[in-house]
Length: 280
Ligand code: GLN
Image (cartoon, rainbow, N blue to C red; front, side, top):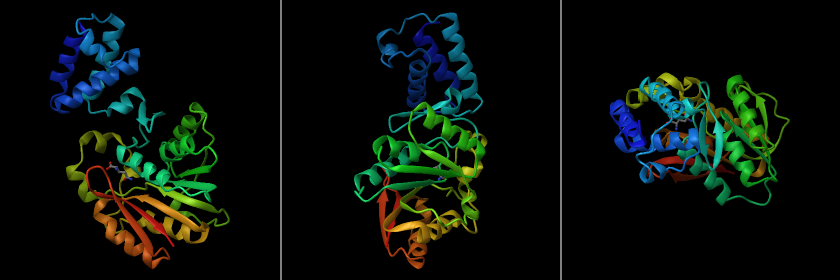
């Protein structure tokens, strides 16, 4: 089979799963990933005849995609802020919105920041991207999931980024002796009632633990993180959250009630209120 025939097989086999533009994009990313070919090869050499092993790799991937496995889990990596991060079942795939959160943090950074925490770190994406940009920051990531922490530590090691990770159930956090100057967090914030509009490849493959919060107490992680911040965060320090746009107002009221009267909201690229910064 040549490249264009293989691409057409992807298009016809995946048309119920993804829009055509996305299929073409996945195909290009797959050939770049497996064979280190530039994505323009499909355009430049459409009649290149794939070797048997090359065809097999692509067909195995296609079969996993047909079963609904997210592309990043199939290939085992996800690109995030120019970092190639390992991901796999049990770890949330980093989202493009979270890159915007990091850009906001970096755009506003102050010289007084020394210690930074990423609470609910997952793959370590926030902690690692911040370390890559600010090698002088002492950065620590926390997560309840052993599986996520193993991936985060592997990522730190593979990328030679010095970030430490600690197993911590945020909701049980009681040791308030540690101090920090900045907290950045993308905790779980999806309501169970939102499942109906979510893709099955997210629902069936990504960890519910990293996504969902109880319908009756959706800010449970935010409340705890703000409480931790009120004792651990330095006076001039701030908290940057990614948040469900449906919960922004409630979150701002919560921050105000718990000692963080100043809140700034930032929209994501889709124009949704997605990020909140708290300071005192
Ligand atoms: N942005 C993710 C999603 O919509 C959710 C991340 C989170 O719960 N913190 O799938």
